Length: 477
Image (cartoon, rainbow, N blue to C red; front, side, top):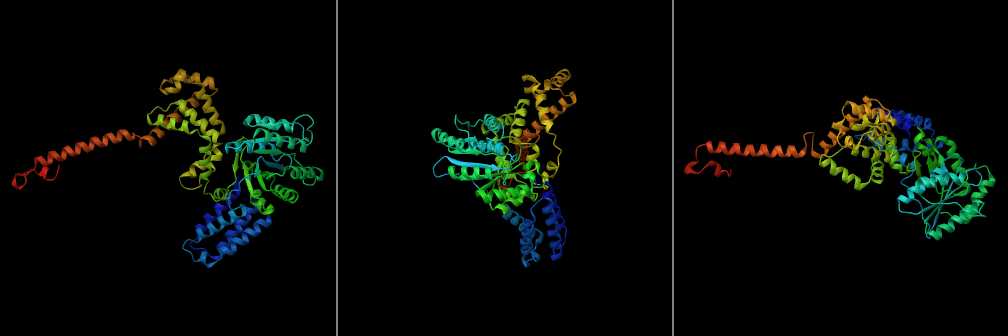
């Protein structure tokens, strides 16, 4: 997401850094580049106009022009203004004073409401909350079945309704009653997609709002529709007083203009962003972190949080113990691959790294998504003995593995080579270098012992000190 805007912003600041000293003309040229970049990224014109005016007012002050690092000052101003456009901090989901809390999911048809409802239910369960989902979409065929399938995939309950519950309001009230009886603290109501021009369906939403008294009305917007999503959000907000936005399909939108426009257009915070099709691909929206990505500074905090959330701590400790005792095998290599794929796609993880410094080559690396599944297929085709000791893999065994995994012998050789490189790298990290910390430490002790013996021999060979005192004893050797 934001690839095109991020590239243009970084290019602009790189050019400004190349100037010996910033002048008013330099800043005007830089702001012109930023304005074009934002418009090309589908940011709405009023937002761009207000943003540029605010940056220009602050950037042309004497504090920036006479600063020892004017480019850094301008960079900070642009960063702060972008954060102000997106919101000053992560917006939390509200809770009702008496549970259950009702969350109404609204939006246009095809924007991803049903999928987002499932993702949000899974996210809430990770926060130790107990959600109950219900679909009140009685207009689209199989809409309620779709939510039931998603509920089965993520292991969360869904209210299917009883006989006589045929209207959206009846289904929603039934789910609310069921949540109270079963002790569920949140009810997620997946509504039917509708146009803001459809008065009948919008009236249906207004009735749900009046009867359910939701603590949150989340507008689900498709980021790929750009300014259409912004206009629809503003119309829904006028009718329903939307409390927050869920921006979906950001992984497929290289421009990201909707994210920069929708808050200013509605006054509502973006609370979540969808970054993929998997149920776990839902992130809390942190404006400062998104701006860091835009400006090429990466988003290491989100990456660390993802690993902490998805990686089993007990399994990680066991893996560390095996590495310390030089027991890292192909089986452990496979477990590592599976843990990484649980966190998300490699491309999405690399996009969170800073664009400069030691991470530059990693970010520009070409990632083949099929490579991971191919590697796992090759490891799966090995026997337990072969996975525990790769030295057993002679020519005939490698041909058998290649045939069993549908790959070539060369690809099997590449996996074995990668495993050995990973094992050596981990061994060096744990033991303090390629030779191993413990062995180096032992050899250092031996060298020190030899040096002490050598010094003692040299002192004994010297003449005695006056009075017959031995020089070695005199110096405490």
